[in-house]
Length: 196
Image (cartoon, rainbow, N blue to C red; front, side, top):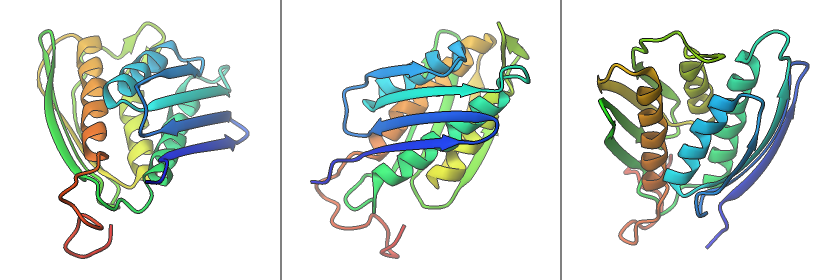
């Protein structure tokens, strides 16, 4: 079986990112991107997906965190897509409603080869510390555009912004971990078209 691991380096005038993702890992994360809240969420994501993630990123902090957050999403999505390979034998679909105290977030994914994000996740607070919460959607939009997956996220209940976002990232980890797992019953590409 092929080792599903990918390393990517991306340098622009705004950011410098080096990332390694292993899909068949143990859930370890070694992250330094200068955005502590994003590091916290990606640590949860890695743990609950059982993906190993290494990330080093710098950016134009004098502007804000937008470029780093978005570009990390792009690089992570690209690494995910490349590590996944041809998708032969994977589960492909997964969904989950994940609770975090009063928050309940629905996350559903299809590793379809088609990028789409449905983001129905109203966030009560515009900021958590120095982190602008609108960047959560920007991160996911960047990720799905490069991962070439369909992702739906929906807030079912919740009032605490931190809890809502944490439920989202834990849920995203769980569904991606499930969707990327091999299913012994699946031979070849998990599509009646024969291509994803």
